[in-house]
Amino acid sequence: MSNTKLIIEERAASIGNFLVGRLLPFRQKRMVGPFIFIDHMGPVKLSEKDNLDIAMHPHIGISTLTFLFEGAILHRDSIGTEIEITPGAVNWMTAGKGVVHTERTPERLRNSTKKLHGLQIWVALPLSEEQCEPSFTHVSADDIPSWETDGVQFKLIAGKAFGKQSPVPVYSPLFFIEITSKEDKKVEVGEHLFGESALYILEGSITSDGHTYDSKQLLVAKDSTLCSFDIVANSTVYIFGGKRFKEERFIEWNFVASDKELIEQAKENWKNNKFPSVRNETERIPLPEQRRFGR
Image (cartoon, rainbow, N blue to C red):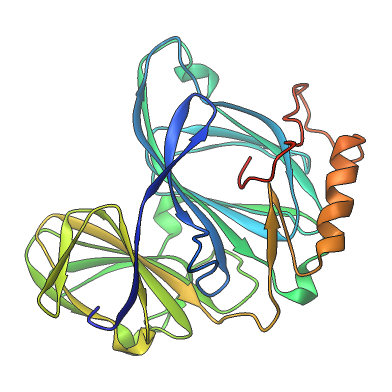
């Protein structure tokens, strides 16, 4: 990753009763390809009295990608989905013209100690799909393409790369890749990437061009096709990105759109209870008075 353009340090943000590390958006870099929002959630240990309880909240203009390392989350949405996600699987929810969902600790874990750790990602939709009907897809861990090359383990969580395709139904050219290694290895993947790309170090470190980069750092590449680095033993990194949209995207609270009027209309609809509801849920997160990102 010697062609690093920007180094972003993980920043703390709050969701409910614990902190997350916020990676995107960032003042100097609002998007990487179609990726517009990334939270590193946890790792956190919750007591038998503490649970994840994110009440009903809306989205427009994005697909959300939930990927867990530890723990479990019960997802419910206004489409009628109710499903538990566990480590290695993918929840892919497309908001389109509007969807509402909740995220909670499953009932089976609520009265016990538990851990929660994962990534929450928003991928902006292309202009042609911004107002599509909402949908939901769950992809099990066993269905995610995974392979090993020269002792380095790869997973293609979403998109296309390395001549492979993830079953996650994305709407624009992108990639989201996990790379792990138990030994010090040279990793050269630039020929398989395209558009914009960034590398997030979850744990461990990498070295490139005489520099060492540690966990909780996000490196944005100047040229994704030159992506090359040395991964240190027992490290895990994620590379994501893809083709950049021609149109600008605006983001306010949980709403993303190419037209600010769509966001203003969504705000009014949420305030006036015009979004669909979620079965078996009654609590709603109110529209914040001040602008902020996420839930």
